[in-house]
Length: 550
Figure (spheres, rainbow, N blue to C red):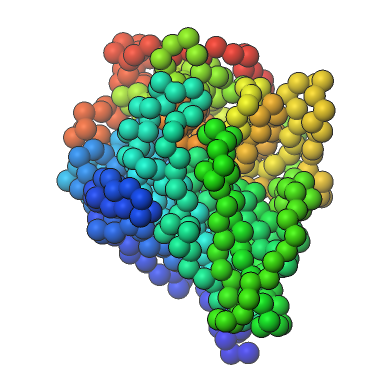
C-alpha cells in the first residue's frame, strides 16, 4: 500500500520531482564484428556496440550529449519523441540543424513530461544509423494502474546488420535493380547474432511486459510466442486498449508493448519465434525470409514444446486499424487540408536510384528549412522560399490535415514515419479500384495513433494529424536506402507561430557557420525566391500529387 501511495504522489508531482538524466555518447569508429561473420568499420558510442539502452522515467529531462569523433557531422534523433516547442532538438540532419561538426559536442535536451513508452535513438545524418549509431529508449511510466498490469519489463531489440559498411552497400544499389544486392543482412536480437539469442526467463504465473523495438532499416519482423496470448497495450509510444493477438508484424521503426502471462506449469520451455522478411530484397531460402528463436525458459532442463506450423493468414496479427487508443481521442474532423502523395518509382533508364513521396527526390539544401521558416517573416508561409527538392508542405496552425500516401509502384512495400506527430490511422485499401484487396477502415470507436506504418504494394493509407506542434518536421520512408535516395518530404508547420515560440540555441547556429551553411534566408541563403546556387532538383516521373484546402 505504501508503494502504491508513493507512486500516486510521484505521478501528481511529476514536474517538481523530475530528474535530469545525463547520458553521454562519445561517438567514434570501431572495427568490429557484431555478427561473428564480417568485420568492418562501424560507428559506436563510448567504444562499444551495441550501445546500451537508455532508461528514463516519465517527467525526467534527458540530457543526451553527443561527442563527435567522426570525420563528418553527426546528429541524434529521438525516434517517437514529439519535441514540442523544441523542433531544433529533433536531430534531422540539414532539416532542423546542420549537424555537430567533427571534434565538437552538443547536448540535446529531451523533455518527457507528456510522453512515455517505447522509443529509440539513432543518427539522422546520412547512413550513420545503418552503421550502428542506434539504441533503444524506454520512458518508464508512473501510472499506478498501468504498472499494476505486469510484474516484469523485458526489452527485445531487433536489428538488421550488413556485411559491409553502408557506403559500399549504397554504392551497390546504384547499379542493382530494386536494391537486390547479394549481401544479405544478418539479424541481431538484443545486439548480438540472432543465432546466439540469450534466453528470457519466465516464472510461473508472472506477467511480462515485452517491449519490442524494430531498429531496422530494411527488414520487417514477425514475432510470435506459440502457446501464449499477447495482450497489445502500446504501439509507438501510444497506449491502446488491451487487445489479444497471436503475433506482431512490424515494419522498420515500429515498436510494440505486449503483456504475456506465463503458464503455471514448469513442464515445458517455449520458443519466441522471430521471422525476418522483406520484399525489398530478393527471396532466398535461409536468407529472406529468415527464422530465429529466442528461448523462453521455465525450467533449465525442460523440453521445448512444439506446435503445428500454421500459415500467416491463420495468425491474428496486431492490427492498428482494429486497435483503439487508451486516451479515447476521437477522429479528427472536419478536415481542413487534404494531401495526396504518390510513391514515385526509380527511373530505370538511368544509373540514378531514387524514390520519392513528392514530385522531386528529396535532397538537402544549404539552409535547413527550420531556419528558413524562422527567418523569412511572412514569406515563410509561401512555398517560394523553400527549394523544390524539400517537397515542403505548409500547414496552418491547429488545422486538421488528412494525408493519403499511395503506393502504386509494385512489387515493394514502403514505410512512412512522421517526425513531430503520432497520426491517426484512418484507412487503407487498393490504389486500383479494380483490385480484390479490401478497403479497411478503423473499426473501433476511435482510431489508433502511431508514428510509423507500412505502405503495402498497390495500396494507399490515410492518416490524420492536428497541426498543433509548430516546427519543421521530416516525413520519410524508414527503409533507409529509400530515405537516402530521396523518399521524403517536409511539413512546415505553423511558421508564423514558430517564429514567436522557437529560439534555436546559439551553439547550433555556430555549428552551421563552422560547416559553411547560412542560417537565414531562403533555402539558398538569399531573401525572396532567388535560389541561385542550389542544384536543380531531380524530378521523378509518376502520378501527380494534390493538396487541397488551406
